[in-house]
Length: 92
Image (tube, rainbow, N blue to C red; front, side):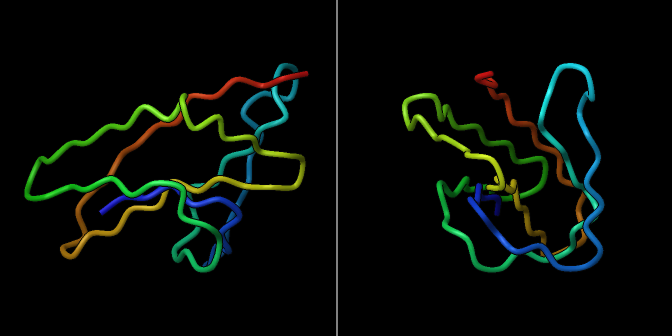
């Protein structure tokens, strides 16, 4: 399963890195191992091997203020590799 969570608490040892120091205020972490708390924005159902899912979130008009986070969290029952991407627009 996959879900998008606003203001989640990440466990493990999160390691945030800037996307671009010159053009973005966004940082990314891929080291967090657990996700607790926060508000589920949207679940994305995945079923079976090589399953894929996508959701258009533009109509939700999600706004992330300074200090807030969005986490793309995935869970697998058999240690599968999961990949995902988020597209955003930064308002300077």
